[in-house]
Each structure stands twice: as C-alpha cells, then as structure tokens.
Length: 283
Ligand code: G3H
Ligand code: ZN
Image (tube, rainbow, N blue to C red; front, side, top):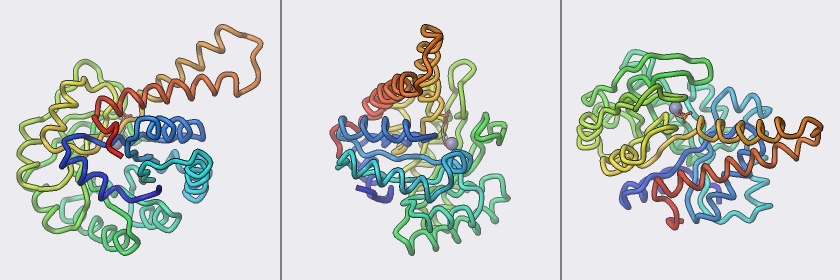
C-alpha cells in the first residue's frame, strides 16, 4: 500500500531498525525494489531525485508506474514514493500534486533562517495533503545529480531549532557521509549524531548509505537513525551484471537479456540492505 513515511519511520525508530530509501532510475529499479521488500516483508521508500524523475518522464509517470506495479505485483508492504533532495517549494509541490507520499526539502545550502522558512512552507503544504517531509542541515559530501559539495557537519543546536520551528517528520543531519563511492573508510560524526538525537526527538536520516560498513550502520541505528538512503550500490551492481552479459555475448541485442540480470542484481543488493538495516519481517 502507498503510504507516507511518517508511521513507518516512527515504528522503525521505536523498534531500533532503519527503513531503506532505495533510489529509482527506471522501471527495473521499481520492480526489483518492490519485489525485494515484499519477499522480505519490509516497509520500503522509493527515492526519486529531480534528475531521475525527469529521466523517467516526470513525476506523474513515476507515480503511475509505481502504482501500476504495486497493483500487478500485489504488494502488501508499506511503500512510500519520496522526492529525494527537493530543491525548492515549487518542486516539492509538484511532487505532492503528482501523488508522491513524501518529500525531502533540501534547503541546506540556504542560510539557516531561509532553510527554516522554505521548510515550513513545504511542511504546511505537504501535511495538508497527508504527505511527510524530510529536511536537511549541513552538507552531504560528493556528487548528487551534478550538485557537488564538500562535507559540512550539521550543527546540533540548529537541528534542535529546526525541529522546534517546523513540524518536519524526519531530519537528515549531514555528519560526514558522502554521495557516491567512499574513498577510504567513511568517518561519520557519531558524537554529533548522539547529541542531535537527544536534542531533537525525531527519526534521523543517513544519506550516502552506499559503502558504509555494517558496524557503522548498526551504530547509526542505535543512535536514532531510522532511514538510510542507498543509490550507488544498486547502480554499481546493476551495471556490473549488465556488463558481464554484454562482454560474454557480443551478439546479444534483446534488452531483456541484459536488463533482466541487471534487475536481479539490484534485487539481491536491496535484500542485503534490508537485512543489514533490520527492517525485514517488520511489515
Ligand atoms: O539521497 C540519496 C542518497 O543519499 C544516496 O547515496 O548513492 O551514496 O548511496 P548513495
Ligand atoms: Zn542524499
């Protein structure tokens, strides 16, 4: 069933596990992720970046595709369609109007007061439509759809103020995580994560979930992280599977012959993450 993130994240925080946000890039991602979640009896969040939304034909096409597969596959676990790193109130509104059940407003590059102002406006509109809202403070490192940023840690005091001033449903404080592959071991700010968790009593979100070792995942969950975003690992697995088929069979031309194995690789990766995050058997 299509739902907002609110309830699934509150349950996750309470139950000390995290729900995975798996970004979708095309049909095969939606198929693989929905099947993985259903088999594992796990709630799941389908993340849609603005760029990927555009690639798939726009937010409306995304909603029809997801709803179609939920029906065809008879999916019973809770599923959220979530705008990932929404860049403005207008983009968030467009997603809500198209039928997304959750949005992230990423106004973290604006001055703090402006971030609060934009985030409040999104919350007002989204909540009126039963849609949940994620906000961000600080800067996630690496590359997200061409937006390249250096790492900047979220300020715990600002996190407290943000939660107090807005009615956001979850918060992504950037604490050293990176979009895309890590170069060396990730170095996450667990001290700050603990502090933020204590100051701001709501589910925390960890971006850049690809390549984070299991012990760090478990530590983040123990400190109040209830949502973990993964994109790159699925892309790497899918591409490796497709590359293998193409390299081994120079005559192949039916896209199903290589996109199919790519889809299976995404599914296997998602199942692994669901188990690491402990959200299996929770739906
Ligand atoms: O918002 C999306 C995520 O933070 C994905 O990060 O591609 O490093 O897994 P990742
Ligand atoms: Zn992210």
